[in-house]
Image 1 (cartoon, rainbow, N blue to C red):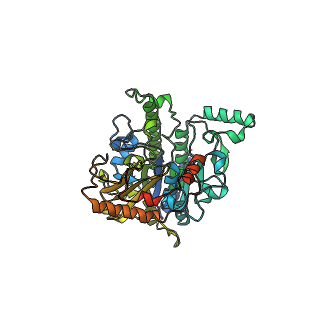
Image 2 (image 1 turned 180 degrees about the vertical axis):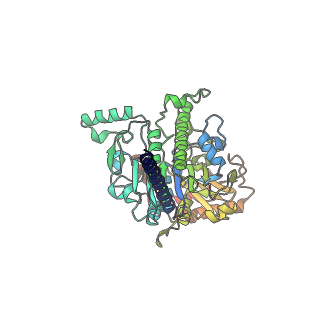
Image 3 (image 1 turned 135 degrees about the vertical axis):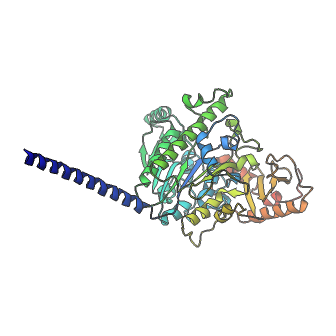
Length: 498
C-alpha cells in the first residue's frame, strides 16, 4: 500500500510540475508576444473629431451647463490648446484640409459636396495624398470610424485613400436612432423611391458592405472604435484611428437617459444637444478603458477637437467667441482641443500659441517616422519641436480662413496674437484675439501698417486658389457665376467702403 501510495503521490507531483511548467511556458510565450508587439515604439495616434461642437461645450473649456467628465480628465492629463483652428468653418472643406494638410481652396474644395445623387463622381482629387496613406505606408494599421464626407465614388472611398478598415457612412451626416431611420429607409425602398432617400437615412457600411445598426449611433461608433483598438492590440503595428463622430451635428436626437443628466437645462434644443455631447463623452470613456485594458493607453497620442465651430441655432455655445458655424469670426472655426499622451506629455498644461488642423499631417508624419511624398504640398507645419518647448510653431506667419457668400467673401488672417477680419461685406478690422477673443475692440486705427501687411498676405494666398470643383447646392453655383466671384480685387482692397 505504501508503494502504491508513493507512486500516486509521485504521479500527482509530476502532474503538478507539468502544469506549472505549461503555465510558465504559456506566460513566457505571452510575455514574448507582448514584447514583440512593443518592438515598434512609435505612438498609436487617435484623432477624435466631433461635428459642430461649440467652443464652450466641454467642461475643460468652461462649459457652464454640459458635463464631460471623461474628456475633462483627458484634458487635465494632457495639454489644452486655447488657439486651435480648423481649416474651414464648414464640415467638408474642414475635413479635406485635415486629411490633405492643405487649405481646401487650393484644390477646389471650398464648398461642401452636393447632397445625395448630385455628389456622384465627385470627391477630393486622388492626386492629394492623404495623411492616412502616408501613415499606412509607414507601417501603421489605419482605421476610420464614423463620418467621411470626402467623396462616395470608389476612387474616393476610405479603403482606397489609406484606410485599412472603415466603418461608418460616406456622406455628410446621419440620423441617430436606427429604429427610426432603418424603418423609413426600408419603406422608401419598398415604394421604389431609392433615388429620393435622404442620405441621413441610408445604411452604414463596413469596408463597402452594408451593416445593420441596432444602437444609438454615437454608441455604435464608440463600440466600433473599441473594436478597432482591441484588434490592433493583437498585431505588430502601431495604429492610426480617425474617429469622426457626427454628434452633436443635427438632427438633434439624444436618448432620454442622456438628456436626464441635464435637468437644469430648460431650453429644449440645448437639452438635446447636451445629451448628444454627453453620449460622445461616455464613448470616449469607453475607448480610454479599452486602451488601458489592451495595454496601449500610455503610448497613444489622443487629439480631440471639432471640425468647425458650434451651430448656435442648433443648441451650441461658442462663448466667449463671436460667431457660429460657417463664420470666419472666431466662433466659426476656433475649436476646443487637447493633446493627451502619458509617455510624452505631462498633464495640466495649456498651450496658447496658434495651432491649425492643417498641422496634423506633418506632425503625425514626424511622430510616425513616415515619409511625405516629395511632390506633396503641405500648408501645415510640424508642431512637435515647438510644442514640446512651449513655443509657437509659426511665429510671424499668417494663418488663413475664407468662406464665400453671395457676391463677397468673409476672411480671417491670424498672425501671432493679431487677426485681420473682413466680415459681412464690411471693412477690414484688426483684433488682438489672444486678449480679446470676443473681437470687441477694433485696433485698425492703432496698427494700420500691421493690418495692411496681413491683408497683403491674404491677397497673395488667394492667388493660389483653384476654381471650386462643386457647390453644395445648385443655387450657390448660380450665385457664384451671377456675381462673377471670387472678386478678390475687391476683397483685398484695404480701403474698401461699407
